[in-house]
Image (cartoon, rainbow, N blue to C red; front, side, top):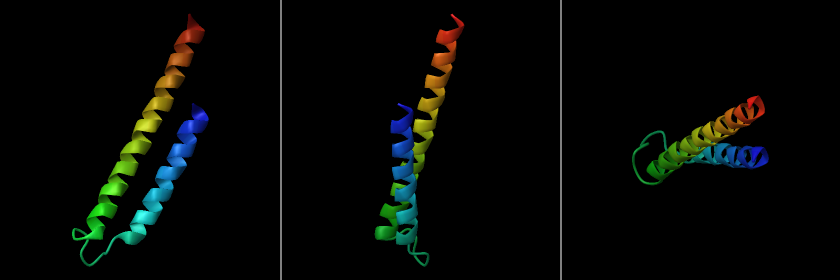
Length: 67
């Protein structure tokens, strides 16, 4: 599970990097720039969800070890 979250996080970071280059700074809310901004936001959400998943698995593991 840890490897899965790391791989997906790296892919999300790569998507963020690519989409930052696609934003037109003169008109950031028109055309392809909107798609890039939405993809950046979705990638950030995916990273946050994956980190929550890793943290919950870690807490679950610790609770099982204590019992």
